[in-house]
Length: 347
Image 1: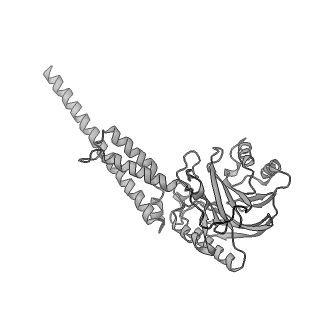
Image 2: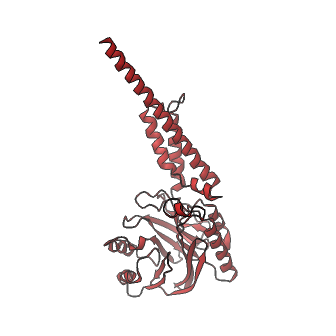
Image 3: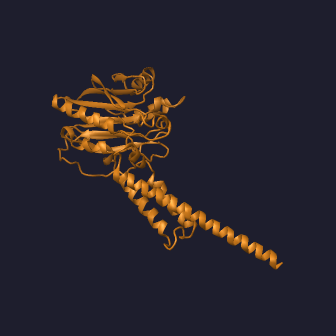
């Protein structure tokens, strides 16, 4: 009897030691991933490899750290009681603040009687699967934007069904290269100026004439692959490195300004996080642009995946001569991206 008790005690002790060892290993791995993720947010995408670290999801890691530490009653890290919990809480708060829209005041005070315009961008994933296009159309119809930019739109025939639902006077500019398709729609007159080819992406410049003024829109769509060095993996697994694309867009913005045809709105699926270094120049080039999602009044700014939007890769940038009012981000699981409805006033 004593022998059996000793064996049981030894087994329980061994199981307890194994449980603690697993906890230490999981805790060390979690802290390491958090450090790598924070490094990526600080260093940002200076190279493809550094850019990968930006995609380490800090918010889920923070929640996991809290859960893990509570499971081990605050003893996940040796000699630091609830140390992992404090790390997790800090990461959750910090990463949440960085991804929540600010109801900030516009950089430029403009009169309140200016004409308000609504602008909607959405990657609709080719119209969704069978019978999902109707749901996507309804979401767009309910918001009835003045200007609609669609990344990965469905066929032109299916788009015509949407335009008929929106009204008989709606116009369409459709760009259908082999991979990246774009559509710009509006009840106001549209004019296609030109198509633009970027490294790792395509675009088109469309002029919309509304309320007696013209708005020049650059619609873009970033390609899927991250780099030629990592072509196979980046096609389906790895996130994207968008420095070449963003540099080319900045050059286009500067060139348009010099030609007296400045771009007013840039919109599309960039496949690039808003903290990407290439976006820094957007705030300065051609008079400067502001990210519309920053005016989303406390909403979560992530756009992909729609069911768990950890990453903000779809963006609308509006020129600083325009006065932002508010931005609404919305979800429809028929698409893997969230949409954005941007309200602004024209100067």
